[in-house]
Length: 590
Image (cartoon, rainbow, N blue to C red; front, side):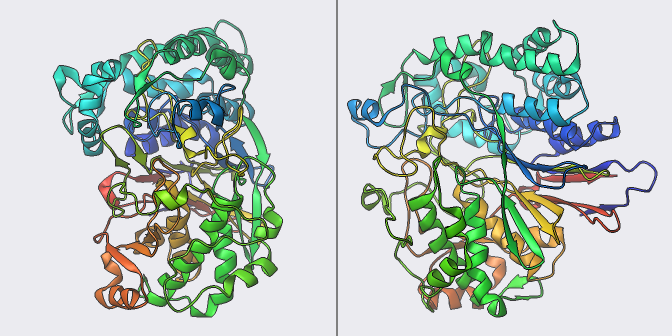
């Protein structure tokens, strides 16, 4: 963990992310006089190059941020909507009861480009060329391939070779995945970004240039290429070939935007999350439920007790059941779901033994009928801290994360995702593929998260910000799909209950439940399954088994990819921490 004082010469801020090159990029921007927003945008684009199996230009990015002048957390919405032609009736006509997890049918409007540029225009100081140049350089000159990229490509190699030839040309040079440690170049993507820069710099003025680049994406050559490519049918994980639904009009009709954050108080602490079009408020629901068990939660020598894990897991089951019944891009009764009275009612359902039921609360709560069929479906080992990728490109879990704070107090927490290399075929003119986020909709009508045209799916992406006595002090988050707000709960409890610092809280043993439906195709869930790191100790694992949990030993260092930055408003002291698991996350500052 890094610590620094802003009054010292040479101090600019802190950056923590899931990849060392992204963190180094963010730090370089800070050292060049940029602020936290400039650094986050530059690092965000680099993440699209260095972790292409986890996010890409065709993906999305929700973020939380505060500025040095306005300490009220705000949300950047970079999640695009479903195509105008995306209806349950269309999928029914194709004989589908779930939206495939790969291929073109699952695409939503790409949101990352417009969102990053909106944030840069309104809160950054650098030009687009200044922040995009790092990613262009890495795409053109190459980046070292990490092992997970090779493993992901190997898993989908047959799909690429037999059905997605444009992806094979990019990711299977000479018929094989690039070896770990080798350099991989994506010069088509570099040229796409250079062309967007050319469009931007055809007009004078920093803000006008950024808007010109946004327009070139959503109403120019990028939208035209996406429209044309989407009309071709490609194999998806339904086992059949389908064309996409996304059109140039869909891209032209959407822009990134800002929203109020959901702010929930827990004594001197407060938690800021994105709205219920994400799963974000489920972390606040878990914490509200656990308030009633505060005296029973404890850490011993940095390790949670079995009682703590049991209570947290049972509260997670209740909160995530409410996610399935209530959350979506619609009017969600969050005031009620996050209220003390509702939590007190729900808390009475927590017993001494593990529950095997999916129990949403409230009158009118409705779960998708198909869940009876998806219970117990096989989607790969729950012990994986990285995404499970099937041979047809389906993914359970995903994503990257970045946190930045500067000496002035600007702070950003962003969780980019989607458009990963295995989500759909590469668009040859652009060098990237579309996302598959629409798989998170239900095709059953009448649910909060039912598919409808021009609607956001209820996504798993969930950046976080913590406030102390009303002042923003920590930005944090993790990749991990449905596990994001469970691993962040582990971090929160370790820090606020266990008294551990940021790095110790990230390093503390983590756990998660799979006892509620996955947000990823084929929407599996396994009642009573509890995945936990073995460092909690054999006695605690036995205790949890005796309580009825189906314990999956994940190994000592397997779960979560958290990062965090913090700022003490009284002293100005800055901190940053990153995940040691996988030896890839990186925190840096001065």
